[in-house]
Image 1: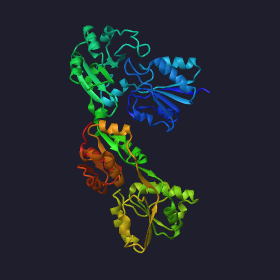
Image 2: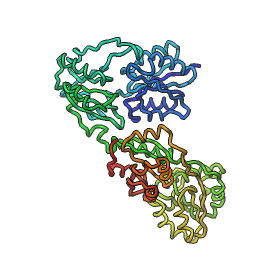
Image 3: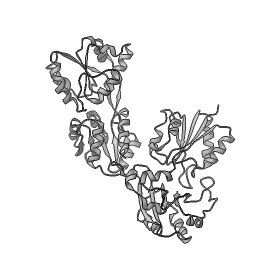
Amino acid sequence: MTGKVFLVGAGPGDPGMITMRAYEVLSQADAVLYDGLVNPEILKFTPANCLLQCVGKRGHGGAWQQSQINDRMVEVARTHNRVVRLKGGDTSIFARTSEELDRLTSEGIQVEVVPGITVALAVAATTGIPITHRDWSSSVALVTGQSQPSDGYSDSEESIDWEALARFPGTLVLYMGLSTAANWSQQLIEAGKPGSTPVALIHRCSWPDQQTVLCDLASLNETLSSHPKLLAPVVTIVGDVVRAANAAGGFTSRPLFGRTFVLTGPSQQSLQLQAMFREQGAQCILAAAIEIVPPADWRSLDQAIGILDHTDWLVFSSKYGVRYFFERLNDLGLDARALRASQVAAVGASTAKVLREYGIRCDLFPEQDAGADVLLEQLGPRSVGKRVTLVRTPEGNTRLSDSLVPKAAEVRQADAYRQAPVEDWSGTIREAIERTDGCTLVVTSSNGARRACELLGAARVQTAWLSISESVTEVLREFGCLQIATCESANYASLVAKAIAMGCPRT
């Protein structure tokens, strides 16, 4: 059987700027052949067993010729059911989609085209520069800054009419024009375009390291010489609309734009935190220092479940404990009714929220995620003479149990999950951390902080840290870390607020 191929536009870069249809297709893909400029974060929308292969070009001398890409699409479609050809931007703008479409249909392969947001339409959202304006421009021309080759290697097949573009009354948006800017800017001026025409150069539109450089047409070449780090991909806006730029309407107005955070918490946890940081414009690197896994054996938890009818207080120290507890309860053929004789306490509001998902309303929990100390203040007097079971991890601190033992009639510890340290950060993660100047490592547990310090080695001392609580900060200090910012409350919202308040350096 031959599979179906989806030609999908990935948008300008920000994962939040792909279409719903693109997300649906990626989430069900068996194989993805993607351009080199596609944001790797978008590839995370694919299933775990999906084949991922980069078929990107690099200018006219890229690793893949267009004919090779066409052959590879056909080859993969013969062995996979749902194949995605993922392109930067939109499928119809300088993407050579028609060539791929022709080849696939000639082979009898079913095709669906999924459009994306092209960078010309994204600049208004990311820079505050409108490409049309009622006073200055009622039309737009999308132009390639270099002639199009036939196969990725050969000489160009067409010439660009710069004289006609110089007369064009609206906005010019030039793609792929960085390396030829000296040539086309001069040609526009010689053809009558005023040298005073405003120009905006936007590097990596919608990415966390987006950069915008403003100049006029006459000084474009000089401006590029003074900005040697302004590298492709760059889109260039030429026209009076550049004067209407409003930074308040762009991505750069978000408080954490241009800042990078390394999230060291477990993978399940970091996805939620990543979304919160991204909402404020930050770039996130997922680098779990520990992972949450089932306990080595279930005996202590099974014993605790077996005596629930004789348990006065059932205390959950984390949302992971809640999930593993109820999964085990289900495995044993039980449900929430097994808790009928027990009162339930949680370490904070987040854990209490997860309990509600299982139909349990907490009898006691701090309104804020303030940690075990606040829970102890509330639970201590109520535990006197009572039988208490703590649902926890054996790697957790024992502060709560140690404090309850003198008061309660019995304190039982039920190990519901483990915090397993990762052996090492992959080369990709380590390279990303080392490559990113000024990144801040975020730690959300004492064990995660300990393992992150071990993985970093001596570099931990000069690394900037963002800690979720004072107990986590204590661990960082034990390892000699110097640059530590600590949250006022032990929750994700406080982490993001602290990151904004501390003014983390831009990358």
